[in-house]
Image (cartoon, rainbow, N blue to C red; front, side, top):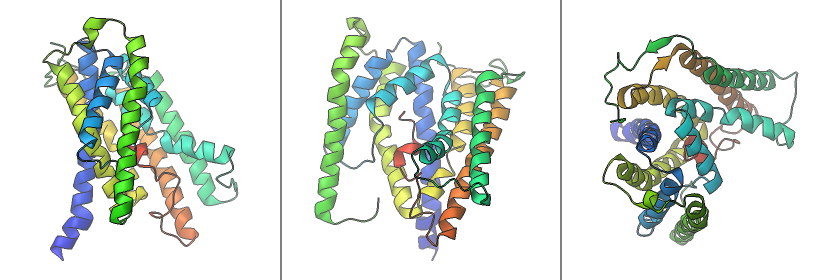
Length: 303
């Protein structure tokens, strides 16, 4: 009984917390590396190449983000902060619901309490994101007050199907590396930028290549075991982790606006997820079996 409880509850919980920590840790390292002069074009190409090598002998992973998404996402972190990136990524359920309504994948029944909660949650999420972006407020924790170590200085399948899936995933990652290569080489023409120094820049690329793959595996495993609704509730945790790591490792200041905005955004996030879960239950199916938010890539900044 205890062993089953550990496998069904403790391990998924620990795995999701670890996945969020790994995800935010990658953002922190990337930000620190850009401060050391790492080009994001160099980062994307090298990390994609390493992921390809990692998946060659062990082709087990979830779907990775598209190249353009990575390019835009990591560029945003370079000019902002990991905390902001983690906060904005929580808007995914809100945007997913808006697009689902536009493309008629969701019924907009305004008299339904579930639909009303979805709409309110979406508006609250967007409002929280706007607060994070446009309102700083007073400093709660400044770099001088922190312990800054600033770096400035799917379901079970048959064996045959499993082999096919893993080969497809490997080919996908390989194609990502091949497609990103000419774009990155043309965008970053400074040959010295492609020389990796044995410092935080090399650690960041290796971290992304190895742990980025393992993180996707953990999330896919949790999705299989507990379902997408369970996985999604851990997403706002990334804001807390990002804020803490930013203060400790990057020496970032923590502002009141970021805290208030993150709380508002998280409330809206959980409102949308709760409404979706209630909707699935009212339709007589488990919320872990069918939901628009079941894509594993929703939960990772693999931007």
